Length: 169
Image (cartoon, rainbow, N blue to C red; front, top):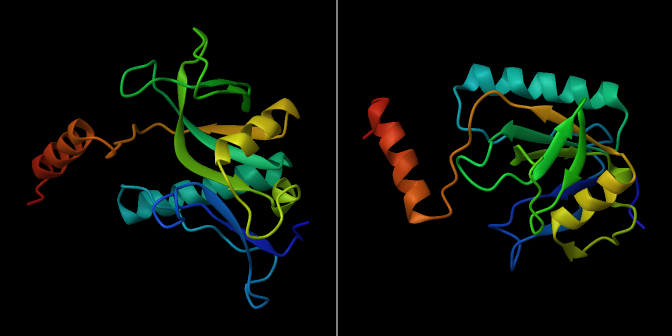
């Protein structure tokens, strides 16, 4: 089983075949390792979001926190039922009319959330989130800014146009 001194690498681009891998934290990092936030906003806004998320996560006491955006099916298929600060349903396969939010792609977890996964195990993070939802252990935080997915030519073109409009090259 995974101990409390575990951090999670959540980067489907670097873990073979996508997914999540449980890896041990070096002892010098300690139990309160802070996640690095990857978010396409100015530095101060990213830091402010990070502080709010960590505070919300610390105060909530749940094993996980998922950021969500009220998508209403606009930019991609909504896959989350979010209400009262909690993820009530998360499903990438079954679509329900009450799914108005989408997983924003930034989540925080306590090490205990991964206790069922031995170190080195690779798995789809959606599986863990589904388990946490079933146990009412997945908090939610609604972000005000939309996301830009770059997993398709259309999404990449949309982000490229936005960056060019903001003075990028």
